Structure formats: C-alpha cells, structure tokens
Image (cartoon, rainbow, N blue to C red):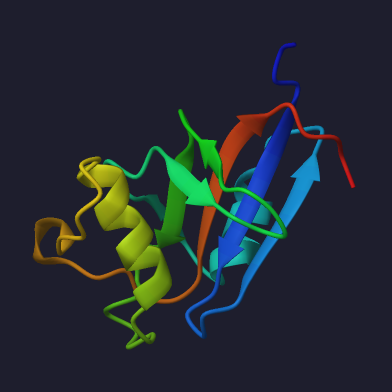
Length: 118
C-alpha cells in the first residue's frame, strides 16, 4: 500500500499534542498557522515516533517546522518537541541536546502516511 495521505502532528509548547490526517500536504499559510508566525524547517528532524491509544508509529521521511522567530520573540521552550528532535538526530535511543539548541513555541511535523483521513 502506498502512503497517500499526510499525518500532521502539532506539538504545542504547553505539552499538548494533536494529530490529524489529511489528503494534501499543508501549504505555507497552514504551516504558519500551526506555529503562529513565520516558519523555518528544523534541521535533521526527519522522523518522529508517535504513540496514541496503541503501539507507537514511526513517521519517517518527514519534515518539522518551527516559528523562525520563536527564541527572538521569547516564546516558551518546547520540551516535548526538543526531545523528539534529539531522538531524531540520535537514533541510538539516547536523548541528547540537539546542537545546543531548544525549540521554542509550537512546532508541526508532517509526513506521508497510509492512515485514513479523519
């Protein structure tokens, strides 16, 4: 089966996480809406392990987007997204501080999926 849809996982700075599955990849305006401002791609954040009501799912070959002015605007650190980023960088399973950086504000991870749209 070919991955036809897109999983869109929004990790908010307050620790809440939401996932939707949609037919098309989010456009620029949608991505900016998720992160509440101008976007930048998070380097090396190309996979995400996600668990919700069942066994974890690994989303690979994805992309993560953050507010490019998050730190400058004083947005809160996003601990959950930073840990996920660290795990994406170091696939051995140990958590490291990625490149001495933290993600700030809400972030969104987007990847192809075989899951059905909601």
